[in-house]
Amino acid sequence: MTLGQLLKEVAIIGSGGQAKWFLKETTVLVNGEPDDRRGRKLYPGDTIEVADHGSFFIRGNQETTD
Image (cartoon, rainbow, N blue to C red; front, side):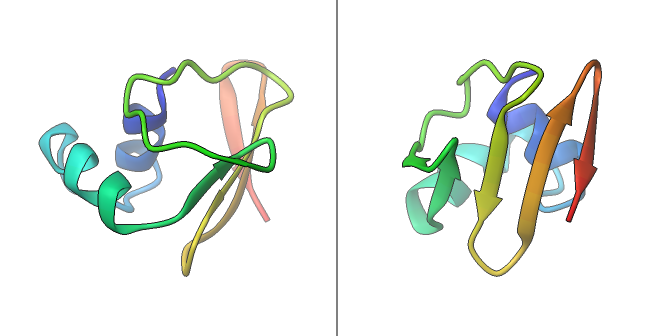
């Protein structure tokens, strides 16, 4: 799964096309580091923090929210 796909899956954005704009306008941390690449691959154990939207933890083929 990519960062853009995650944002769509958890309904933060409505379409994949919105990911590029969203990531330029919003602070997103992947494992504590800022990342604005919609194609960033996510792996089990990754933690994603999205400003004003919460935290997400990648577990296997699923993500969970805090």
